Image (cartoon, rainbow over all chains, first blue to last red; front, side, top):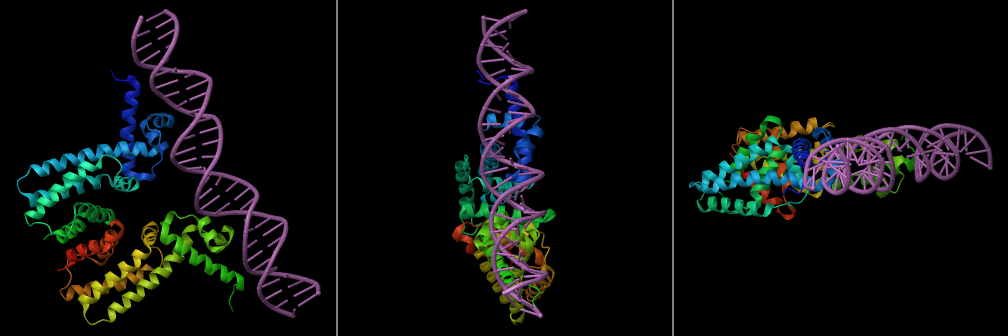
Length: 173
Length: 173
DNA sequence: AAATAACCGGACCGCTCGGTCCGCTTGTGT
DNA sequence: ACACAAGCGGACCGAGCGGTCCGGTTATTT
C-alpha cells in the first residue's frame, strides 16, 4: 500500500521535477514559490512533503547522485582504467554543465545525502587509473572532483571543454 | 581643498576598511548593517557615501585591483618571462586566498571597475611567457585568470597549493 | 561665540524569502 | 451515495535585506 493518495503522489513528482529544473537553473537561491508555481501547486504543498527547503534540495540531489553512480559503475566495468577515468570525468562534466545550479546546491549542503557510496566508487576509478599509470599519484579522489567541478564553475559560456582539457592535462601522470 | 569634512573622511576610511574585511570574509552576500556595525557608524552613513551596495563593492575591489596591478608590474619588470608568470600567479593566489570572499565579489559585479588595464597587463605577462615557451599556446589571459580562480575557490581549507600546482602543470607548454 | 552647512544615526519603508496554519476540496472505502 | 480522512492552496507571519529620510549634532569659518 502506497501510504499516499493518488493525487498527492502525482503532485509530489511534479514538485520534484520542477525543483530539479529550477535548482539546476538557479542554484540553491531558487525560491520555493518559483518551484511551486512551476509545479502548478501552492507552496504550502511543497512544504508539506519537504518541511524544509534543504530537504527538498537533498531529494533533488539524491536523484542527481543516482545518475552519477550509474556513470561510475559503467566506468568500473571497463577494462581500460585510464580511458575509463577520463571518459567518466567527461561524462560527469557533460551532465553537470546541463545543470549548472546543482553544483552550488552540492556545495550549499555539505554532501549530506548518500554521497558516501558514490565517493567510494570514484575512489576506485581514480586509484585504478593511477595504478595503470594514467593519473598522477599525488591527487586523491576528492581532489579530482573538486578540481573538475571548479574548472566547470569558473568557465565562461562555451569554453568549459577547453578548461576541462587543461585540468585533465594537469592530472595526467 | 578636501571637499570633505575631517570626521567624514575618517568615517569613510573606516567604512572602506570594514567593508574590505567583511566582503573578504563573507563575499557579496555580506550585509551593509554588518559593515556599518564593524565600522562603528550607522548604516545611513555608509549609504551616503556609496548610494548602492554595489558602489561600495566597486570601491573595495578598486583597492584590490590596485594591489594586483602592482604585482603585475613587478612581473613585467622581470627578465625571465616564464618564471615571472608562475611567480605572478602564485602571488595572486596567495593574496586571493587571504580574502576568499573577494572572488565572489568580482564575479558578482562583472569586472565593472577599472579592470581593463589590469587585463592588459596580465595579457602581456601571459603572451611573454608563451613566446618564451613556458606556457601552452591555446590559452588566453582570461583563461588563466578563470582557471586559477576556480581552482582556488574549489579547494578545501589547506589544499589550495596542491590544486594550484595541478592547474599550473596543466598550463605548461 | 555665533552662524551655517556638512554630517550623523537610526527610525522607517517596501520587498522577498522560508515557514505555519486553517478552512475548503477531493479522493477513497463502504 | 455518503462520510471521513487525506490533501490542498493561499492568507499570514517574522526575519533580514537594501535603501530613504529627517531631526539632531558637530566641524568649520568669521
